[in-house]
Image (cartoon, rainbow, N blue to C red):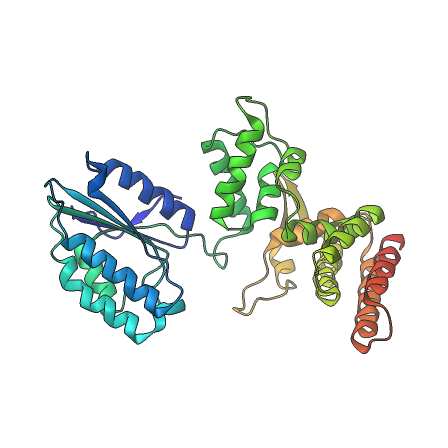
Length: 366
């Protein structure tokens, strides 16, 4: 993701920040390589990750010592305060003693001049209203790398971003490849980098198109993928695959009631999609992945999030694609079966695993 700069002034302090952890890490590493002094002894890296108040205070003190201690043999010095996680209101950053330690550090930051010391700070977040946040941003050249806000950005856009990153890495994603990647990793950009490395190793120097099946083979096996595949196997009427995925989930100690609730959510989407489609309020469109186009009248029937916004049509399209071989009345019956199974599980009237397996067979068999 391209960074958005808060200022472009020349400054001896470089601040890189944002929720896109992988982008922040890469940009900071590239900058450190660019600014690295000729003498490697004049380059110091300090870990900014802290799990306790004491660790945060120690990290601040190490940076203070690093920027105030000039190289013994002269020359410019580069200090990289790396992956700081206590500039905002999460974790140990909430504690008053950490805030005080940071505020007391501001006068030392003002001494960073560039010729003798240059400072790079990379962080996951910052509270811009705090005294330290305000002071740092006045002194530093700042760049932000943030993940897209799913409340404002559709899953379709996330998949397009993944497809773009695949191409930038030298891969040629075929139909469904980026979509499968998204199903496995969500918006975890650190996972994106890790999985892209696997795919690059698999592809080698070949320029052949990367298929859905190849992506599935390389990155499948995560909890998210198993749950996704299980629900879609049930919607698609694939009994053997659904039972295999269910066994894999239970082998990972997934809760039976939790699995049932997730499946119920997908079946509700299938029922809704069938009703909308029967009334010509929904149409499936195909590109590099399947998406649902819902009319303005149909959008009024979509469930709402806590924010009041309608749910994403991406999930609706996925459910619609896999369940379209069954009419709406079939999915209403499936919801009734799910409700009965949930009652049996909660009252302890049956073995939960056996109830789930019979439920899957009953829905798939119709």
